[in-house]
Image (cartoon, rainbow over all chains, first blue to last red):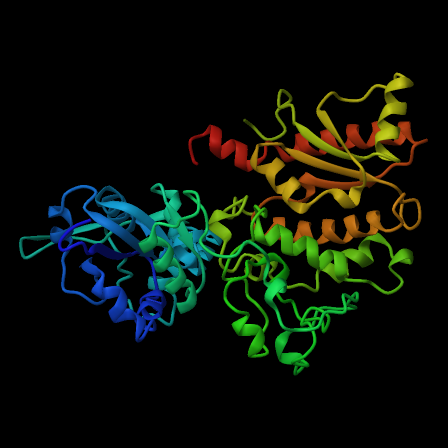
Length: 326
Length: 148
């Protein structure tokens, strides 16, 4: 440990909305406590430290680096590799770094289509159709726009990750517990997720009757009963395929779980698990007499299964991306 | 690898339920019926045991097609409703695969009772031909071609 027995702490970022930074600030009265035992050596959002400061540090001189955001371009990947070299412990912080997150849905399209959408659609004023060129020279200065990667990746797609703290963003309680674990050295085996391993239903306060549902209800169609399980009411709640640890915040606000904590222990693919769950509880009336076509049509009522089931985890799922046109 | 090239031999992974379809495959074998050797079979207790992730994993590993076979609906299932669950999952999985750019016809759900050895052989023949027309699984093609 460096300087006056304080921890050298870095917070790195990739493709992020910076909500994860807000979570750290949200520690409120606990933040000074943490900061009294840590030096912030790199945190682009809050501290005036540049990339060259980071480059100048000795390898392994950062005790703990929290990295949030997914890896979508060359610059993200380079900085992640640099931080890995400089850090003893690298933690994927938040769902983007853990699983690819929302930017990971970009894997349903490709680089060219994304650029076309951003720079080429009628809502964009771009009469000459200019698109990022990678490298340009303006008045003798070489300027570089990092090239977008073909695929959005979780942090573990480019470097080895020591621990994961999921959530969009992680809850302050998770951050507090994780800091405690890290500071006391009381850590789970490398590569594991810091937090409970069970699914959200385990800590959900609602009553589940476990009845079959006749059809999927979209959230705007009903005002859900706040006491009853959302799935029982036909709302596609991701709880059964999602890790606990958030305190069921959305559920308590009468909103369905969107699955930001990623899959619980033992589940490889969050979306496949949810697909399986939904198909198991959809008790179709008179199903025994239905033809194959009728069952197919009923299942077709679930619009956009990838967007529903893989909202936060597409890049770390089994198939990871779209593979072509059908 | 040209689409439909006569030398393209599709690889099929089959999940066959213990009570009906595996027995059907057994019967086909014991009766010395001929069908293409393109299928590799895994016996599961019920078609309802086949998790969607098994199918996704098989496709990721490069199988060109996945066959799930169980007992005829509505009431042949040894566990009463496993085949109905398998059917719901299957149709939802097809929709998911389409969105991920994989032809849903690479996954097939069929029913074959223990006495339908002939039917099982026909399913494998037909599926093999269908996959030959579809060409190699794009995931395998991209891996081989260095696109991944």
